[in-house]
Amino acid sequence: MNKALMLSLAAFSAVSQFSVTGINLVTAQTPYTMVCRGTGNMKSYYSQKSNFNQLDIYFSKATKGSGQSSLKAGNCAWVDRGISNNEPSKLRWEPKQFDDSTISLLKSVRSDKLFYIRTYNVEGSYFKIVKLGF
Image (cartoon, rainbow, N blue to C red; front, side, top):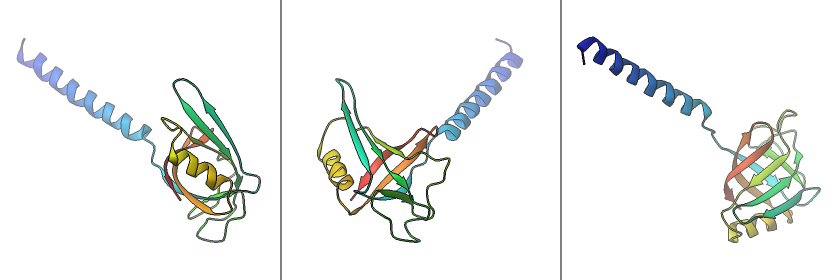
């Protein structure tokens, strides 16, 4: 192989790796802390199939952040602001199996206590829960 072709291929490889890395950084989702208070009109629906489990939780959107005012029953908010109108009002937890964390989440939905989650917005459709805290 001639030297010019080898340099071109090396340059293309470096640019391709940079582009792929750039795409991964852009599409990666960063989870943020959301705070919720159970009961109220908060509803949960659990689906179990042979290869997946899914818990959907519907909540009311708080207009202020959880650090700015107390949450009403059934509401969720970001720590620093309320949930905006263009954000979903559904949380989704996808555990590998129905386990203690899922039971704790269901109990939190049915109690008047605060619970904390790390979540990110999935295409405006729902907030995917990636970490639970009670």
